Image 1 (cartoon, rainbow, N blue to C red):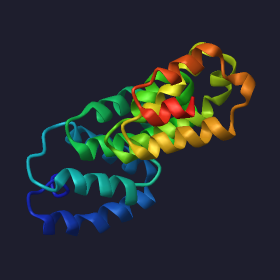
Image 2 (image 1 turned 180 degrees about the vertical axis):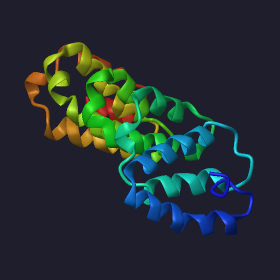
Image 3 (image 1 turned 180 degrees about the horizontal axis):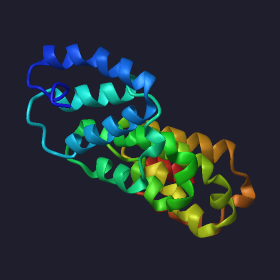
Image 4 (image 1 turned 60 degrees about the horizontal axis):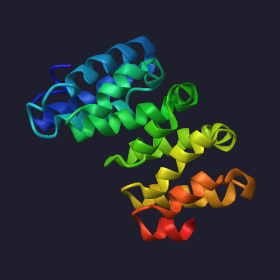
Length: 193
């Protein structure tokens, strides 16, 4: 761990192949090392580039550890001040979204769709797709879901527009949902309504 968080990039880069080889041969090592690296990511970055290096190492060189991370730890990564930690949180969320989507409310998913980090928005979109049946059958969930049309990022708004046009029928649109669209602060959302 000490070499992987060293101030000198050359030392960090030299240990990478060793970590990769050991992790490939020993899944338990991979999982344990990932937990230790995540603990480092939770702290302020002491040396420039270390957090980015660790995220890259975790994603590319340590196989199979992401399913072992619990939702609470992923949440801490997402709330961290480090954009590298947030990015990793998005990847963890994406890996585990099939298991965790049911634990998220639609309004939480919509909020994640406006996150600054692309990997977080991608995970939110994956979870949104898994919640389509709940959105279709529950008017309150639908009311929360249409807020994705007002997301901060074009990619999330375009996703929401495409899903609402292709996956929902006229019967899915209640008067209350239509009124909320027409009351939007965004002109494109009002026109969609």
